[in-house]
Each structure stands twice: as C-alpha cells, then as structure tokens.
Length: 238
Image 1: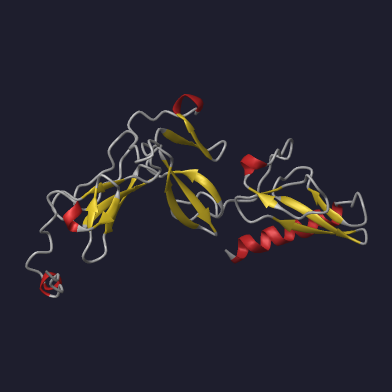
Image 2: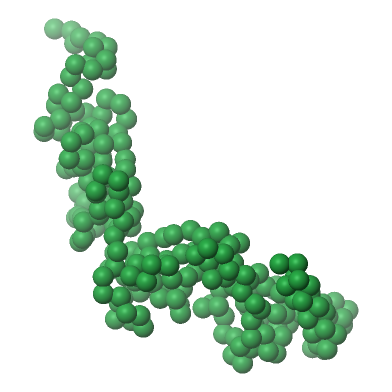
C-alpha cells in the first residue's frame, strides 16, 4: 500500500508541474484522468485525487467536488487511478452490483471500502451504469431469478403489494407471526424481511397493521392469560 501511495503521489507531483492553470485560482480537471484534478492558487497548480471510486465534477471551477461516475460526464477523460478493492467493494466508494450474480434486486453501497447491502424497491433491479434501481426491461443485464432474503425461521417477504387501510400500497408492509401474537414481520421496501415485536401487553393486529389490545384481535384475546402480566392486572370495579 505504501509503494502504491508513493507512485500515485509521484505521478500527481509530475502532473502538477506540467499543468498550466487557466485562471489564477479555481479547481480544474486533468485532460486525461477523470479522478485527477488541480487546485490553482495564485497561478500555481496542486494535483489532487478524488477518493477511489469517485471522479471530479468540473461544472464549476469555484467548487471542489467529487461524485459517483454516473453523475459526471467525463468525456475524453477516460483514465482512472488504480482501484483499491476490499471484500465486495471493487473500489473504495460507489454503488456496485451484488456479489451474487442472481441477486439483481440488491446492490452494495461502499463507503471508504466498507460494504453495505441494500434492496431495490419491489419489481426493480440494479443498474450499475446509472447507479440506480430500474425496471428489468430498461437494464442491460441478464437476471431471471432474483434471490430472496430468508429469516432463520423461514419467513420471506411475499410477492405483490399490500394495501393499507387508506387503500394505498404500504412501502414497508407488516405480517403476523404464525404462532406468537406479540410478534410480527416487517418487509423493508417490500422485500427485506425483519422481525418485529409489540410492547408487552399488546398483540399484533393484521387488520390495522399495528399493535393493539388483545381483546380487539380475534384469536389473541387470551394470549397473556396465565402470565405474570395477567396476574398483575387490577380487577375492574363492578
């Protein structure tokens, strides 16, 4: 890593000596390398590199900004610094395909070499060219069988929209646990399953998609019967 840094620093120094500032001050792109740019101060240039995975946005010479490649038109500036990959991150920063080639409905966001997995909204797959999720027919990518996340108890998010009480599709629908009235499942963005639990004394109501009093949920009226919570109840006055 030290030798790579030394090479990059040496090249940057050489480029800076050759680069002529268009104005006395400002930030200007290298004519060949998209993630290399120059800070000009009093007519002297200092070569600078964007973080690995990002490229220089040259829309305004007053602003020093690096962005993901899909947001920048590099034109003829095709060259890039050597990648610094880590596990699941082809470069240190950016949005990348999931390492599982069939997991087209997921992507990996890398920040300083740390990967974070995210799902696409239901029905969409990840397009690495645009760094966005899009409809399958709009993405130049073969993916016939997207994978599904499965919890340790076997639950997966069902396909299709779930309509809420207002008649609109729920962005993060919830589902009842088959055996435990207090527990339920959350499907983040409709596809990523997580476990949920109501506060003690409440049960999940699948009609309202909220936690509720046991007596209001059919089949769960006596869920807490015989527990310490039931024994601690204050008797209602006649």
